[in-house]
Image 1: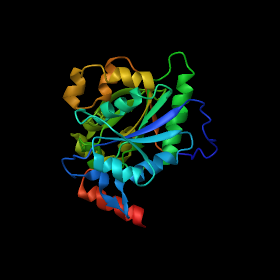
Image 2: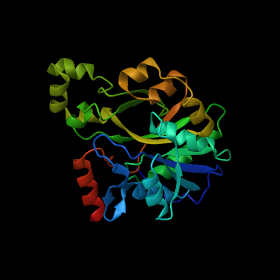
Image 3: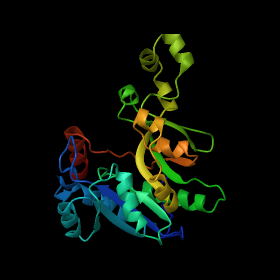
Length: 274
């Protein structure tokens, strides 16, 4: 994907705030947001990546932990203490967004993505800025990356997305979608088909967790109850689709690594310490 290096500062003309949800509790990596990577808390790496995006006006870490607030502010980064009752990071982001009436675009940057590309953030904000100028533009912009292995394709923790000809999301799933029917007929099973025809991997897109919202869509979204499909797949973006929200899906400028396990952490440490 080409680097959109000619984006000037704030050329969107839409007030844009990046909010990073970071709770202290984490099932697999307790205190994950404060784990030091190359001498810096992980959440601060994320915040600095968001600050490097040239069309983001403000970056705020939204957390339920005084320890995270203190660590973030000690590095000169803005932080806000939020409720400890939120069911998701999106709800935490919305609490902060509700207090920012002048913001038009809200960027939800996951607190465990220390390698997220500032260029990817810039590109997603640019697309949302263009959507804001359309009568029926997208309410959400999110990102995808190529799937590079059969193991990743079959991993239910890696979410897949199908898009239409205009790059709007049709569906998100933990299953491999679209289903390559003819190839499976030829080989007898999806696993064998993918092993025998590795070029089939190009059919699939891995959804990655950067979200850019129209502020009013975010606030409305978090007031809707969970939908049946959302509960079945455990994917909250399906709630937006069920309510008719258009989700634009663009290719990330480079790959990132979400830190969910010690193995992920070791990969990121190796990259950022190099």
